[in-house]
Image 1 (spheres, rainbow, N blue to C red):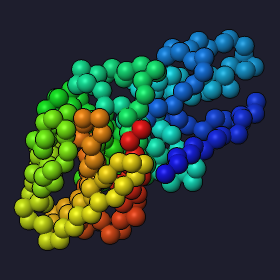
Image 2 (tube, rainbow, N blue to C red; image 1 turned 90 degrees about the vertical axis):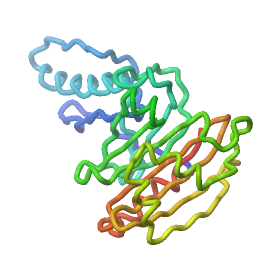
Image 3 (tube, rainbow, N blue to C red; image 1 turned 45 degrees about the vertical axis):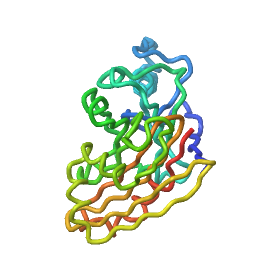
Image 4 (cartoon, helix red, strand yellow; image 1 turned 90 degrees about the horizontal axis):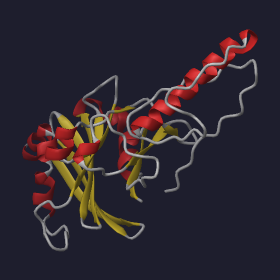
Length: 248
């Protein structure tokens, strides 16, 4: 799926730039900005320049933390870029501008990226996460692992059931959902030469969507979680997260 970004019209001297919200794992670039820009002193332009520079500063800070929103063309979804960095890169250090993202997916624009800490990355494999601020029980997270107990030489997903259970440590409610599932389905699809295994798990408390694939010796898994009672009202957006996931 091709991802596009919305291009903003150039700002005129009297217009006010749209507010910029720095988020947690998506990349934007602003040429010639630094993390602490200087404000010019010209009185007649000071307010407008200050407003512009504050907006640019937000972009600069996002660059320094490795994060910022990329809006899809229709504005309904933003694009998440994941880098699969080592655990020491989490909890403050955002990497560098020369890094190449390893995966991407779309998520509802109203959701907010939530960067995992070193412990979550090191012990649970959580590489990226986005959360609905209005309902924090509704979230999506990506897990990357060098191995998951399937085949430590070729990393083929030879046992999908144990593979799925091996991710339960990253979300303990997933284990309960697997044990108490009232409805569960599994399917597979090929996208850009990669084989994806999709799961749909419904339980009394939570409804999970997941997709798992393997690339270059690593297992990539995306989980979307929602309280069962609110799943139907948000189903199309939740499924878009799964269907838009791509390896880069």
